[in-house]
Length: 170
Picture 1 (cartoon, rainbow, N blue to C red):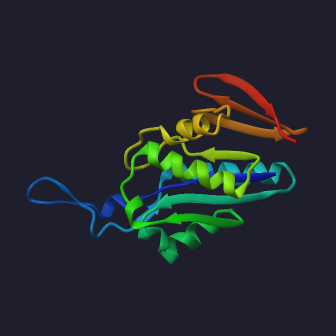
Picture 2 (cartoon, rainbow, N blue to C red):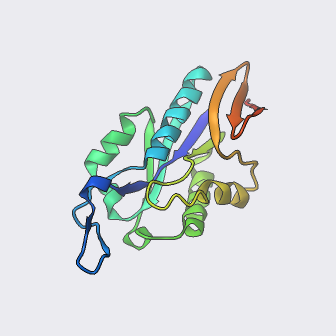
């Protein structure tokens, strides 16, 4: 099973300062993986492990900060088998819609069985990219997953508030 997990880099909160004009100064804030995307990476790795095989590809879109070696190592140390990065400085502050468009082209090029996105991002928490991505690919989308389990080629999940549902893999 080929699983793509999408992630976003956000500024390290403790490194953000406030300028005299009350705007945020992000120049000293190192990039880190959004907390919600850490959960998605863990879920993707667990899904592939429960399915007794497969591949996890971590995918992100953004500016030059994606070339940060420390962040790349951090992502790969959490379970994905490979990274697919779409890096261009013009992608530094793009909208959720633009992000989903780029991700949709990327996942079609990579190929996939399952796509997992975090609940939202640690900076804006707009909760739009995963839903937009599903719409652009004409795929069913599950949001707000709180628990998951895989057995007998079935992926069972619980979504907020207490929905018990499943889909068949393979």
